[in-house]
Image 1 (tube, one colour):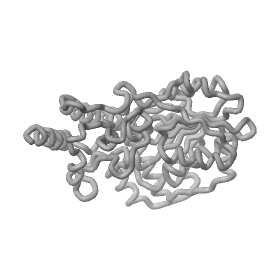
Image 2 (tube, one colour):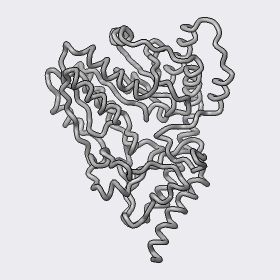
Image 3 (cartoon, rainbow, N blue to C red):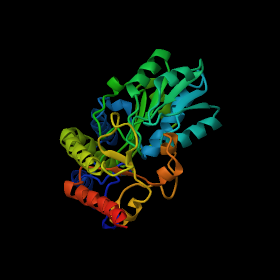
Length: 354
């Protein structure tokens, strides 16, 4: 798959290209009849992807707004219970920025550490609970490493203590089959452009009807119907194509890692057991200049800004500088991955000859 500037695109955790069926639907979409009825139909389509009800879905302007709206609404709604919020230090910056805004509203934030594999310790979470703890914000899957947190254990803990569980599910929904009832989310943010749908629209799942009513009393947004239609179509295609796409993408990631693991000093960052099937974050030896391949390929790097996620996992500044994220999507091909592998191994051979 070619991205911007004709580079081969391995940056699907950042954004994905809309599916052609989504594009065709949006181009031909003509609003007809009752707008509320149409929106409810599209909410039903999005809700079906996570086994939710249409009225449990609130459309937003995008993933960042979903996160910000979810955090603030949950905190304000639960304010009488307390002001203590627990999150973790490797959350997406949208969550960390949102927590800073909560502090201005009176919140006291506890930041859980992560282990070298990028996961929180549930026992550490239990130790941080206070009588006035009202919300936990733990991301489902990390955007940089693909590490999946123990969200079912977190949800069970929240139920035990009657604490609201908010999650940034932007990297999980649209990649993995999600049942909000099994996972136990109270509030979950996710978006369309992460799953081959249009930009400019996100969603917030909220289980509790009183919390939904509280939010809607303070928030008004009606998306363009064609965006909502595109989002619903992307959800439909995800359910239809999940097993085929996940198998294809897993093979691409596994092929790349297996071909590169003989490189002395190479390291996979994050849990290899609890990780999204499409994400590979690798640290290379400093004398292998993977950064030079950015003229051919589009992947994530840390040259402009040091990754606080990798730093939290214990990597040094030099290791972070030489770490790169490759996130694969359904439009990538094995030939593209072979070309990437050949290019990286070519750098290794140059080092050996020099």
